[in-house]
Image (cartoon, rainbow, N blue to C red; front, side, top):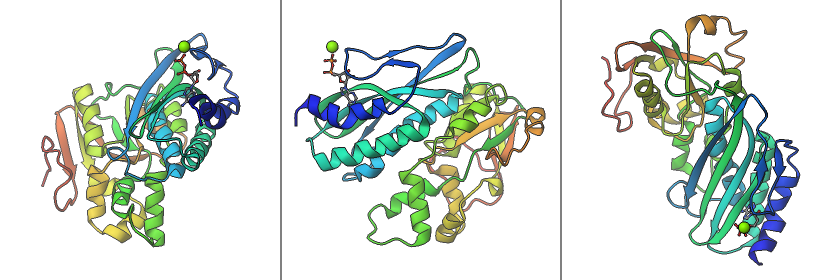
Amino acid sequence: MGEFELIRTYFQPLAERSGQDQLLLGPGDDCAIQRTPPGRDLVFSVDTLVEGVHFPRHYPPEYLGWRALAVAVSDLAAMGASPVCYTLALTLPDASPEWLHGFSDSLARASECFGIALAGGDTTRGPLTITIQVHGTVEAGCGLYRAGAKADDLVCVSGPLGAAGAALDYLDAATLSSSQLAIMSRYHFPQPRLTLGQQMVGRASAAIDISDGLLADLGHILSASGVGARIEVGKIPVMNELLELRGPSARELALGAGDDYELCLTIPPAIFAALESPTAEGLTVIGTITSQPGLQLEGAVTGRVGGYDHFEDSP
Ligand code: ADP
Ligand code: MG
């Protein structure tokens, strides 16, 4: 199969199904054209996933399409942006129809679910690598930055942490218990918190998506904002299945492990109090921003948490 037939067969249909009116021209020309409505800012970001580095070798294409797009779209969620379109630069060792079918199907499901249209891309031969550039928009001047957290703001997360990190241990398992299956789906099918991110525009003082682990990513908010935080470890949401499988070390995973793609947000207390239903929005308060720099962890943490030695554990 030639390059153009491959694009026509597997990727062109994703663009045609999108219904995104801001994408004026999709794949097939020298460039795509996006129209950004007046009063909106264009928000964009690129992510590369390399086989054997960002996902395991022989990772099923049925998961890879979803995962690659979800990881990229999660950055839009963290900025409070609404997705519009994306480009896909695909480097493939060969044009296996089975692989392409599984991958493009999985990508199509993710595109539809996140409301984002394939605008174009590039197709080359080489070691399996997937680069996705996502475009979204946000009300002009209202994007959520990592900088902006202030003393006394509440530190919130959008969902349970640690499960995707634990899933790495079961990727090669031949059979899985129901708890292990629940954990695996957190790794295979991350759910970018788009609605929450958009709801937090004008409300949250800072936001980030948790790709590298809570401590590392909250650390980025703290250093960008020039503040510290006190976190109550016992308040960090953890899936029951993870507690079942890992006992107390589930909390260490929740602090240190990545790949969950939940949001970490800081919200001024008065704004938080005015939210209709924080739990319905999926928010759990896990701590408070402090004017004193550094991160204090309150509550039992056994063992080592990641390798983040610039953070101090309080007794
Ligand atoms: P050019 O040579 O002008 O850069 P290409 O030959 O790379 O164009 O691509 C031809 C068209 O196919 C372009 O519109 C491009 O966006 C689209 N395309 C190429 N690869 C992909 C892909 N993996 N997914 C979607 N569209 C693609
Ligand atoms: Mg050209």
